[in-house]
Length: 507
Ligand SMILES: [Fe+2]
Ligand SMILES: [Fe+2]
Image 1: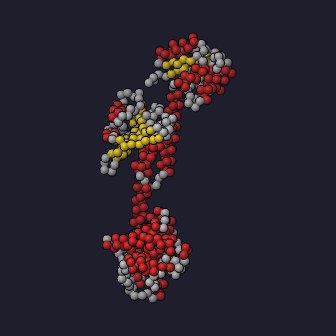
Image 2: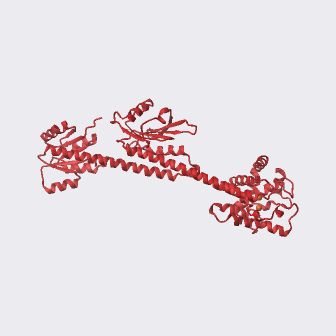
Image 3: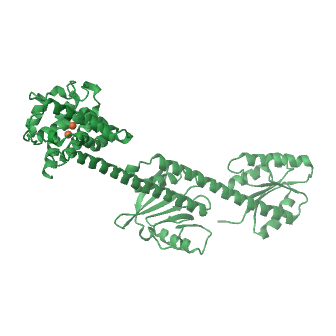
């Protein structure tokens, strides 16, 4: 690889070209000669040119036109052009500026001045290159950030899948996009301390991924410091990180021309073979991506913890309300399971299924207000006592309150004694006026109440309970239930029996 800056010299006078070559060559530059405009454009297309020294007065295509064409091409417009002009005339310089030239030199030129200008333009070009790379990195970071947060679901966050997805995106999607790395290796520490590593690379038009036996590459001991990042380019001979990684990677059949990496405690990642020089910023991009991902992971853990605490509190309150009941609290666990089962059978969304599983437990929370003597009365309740019992629905809704997270719990507390035919309480709602969660809960609650022994009745078997619900017994009638809920129940009633037996025996 020729690392000497290539200076394209364009002049129709061979004497001038020889002159330029004579003082550029010994000073560490690689002059490339072109005798006219067409040849100059061809040379630019052929290879990496760093600076163009361009004669203005040439036959066929003059220097202004050559310059305009260079600057009109997205691929070459950043190559600095110096116009060599015999005219010091102001208008010619203006034409040159309009054509996009970066600088001017007057003929006959002074060798030292030409060298000084070339040196300055090369520095500008290098800075431009760094700016381009930084822009590219910022753009990638924004894209990663957007991708990460758009797909973020705190309750279902999967660190591994997340990291894998990022690196699918990280590698250029098309082979023309040579700015991005061609290969990415991602190592992750498993909970048992072992490590897995995957390799992502281009395979024709698509991206390929495969596990690799990377061994030491997962968590190598390298002098990366606290930042955990490192990078190198091909020219960094003698760099200890380059030497070590090149040797490890060659065992995997990979030859790194350049590399940026992040080495963390639980994640290591290497991006290799960018189509340009890499810098500290490329490693910083990797670092940032990992940190964003780890941040989402910790956010996800916090959200999960809060969710657990919420569920725990809901259930604790529900248990408290059952304290005066003759069941041991398994009733609320069972109805949660029946409700979830019925809701899923009815095709309700999964979030509804999970919410009703938990929040149905609060259906009788209003019984905290009901005198134990009434709750535990063995005989038939008199009308006044029944009026008091009825109030547990409205009282439950009041206790639960209006928090948006407990909307379903409140609705169930209020409506679980309504009957589809309008003979229930507290409002005597009929049919679809009763919310679906109330209709589901009515059946679940009733099934469990029949199965369970109470002070005023013995326990009933599954078959007897089924018959009472589907055929009626003079107190319970099928018309009390939503026909759709009832149909769903009949399809899966065997699982109700399993739930009842499971929770009762483990009590
Ligand atoms: Fe109730
Ligand atoms: Fe109940």
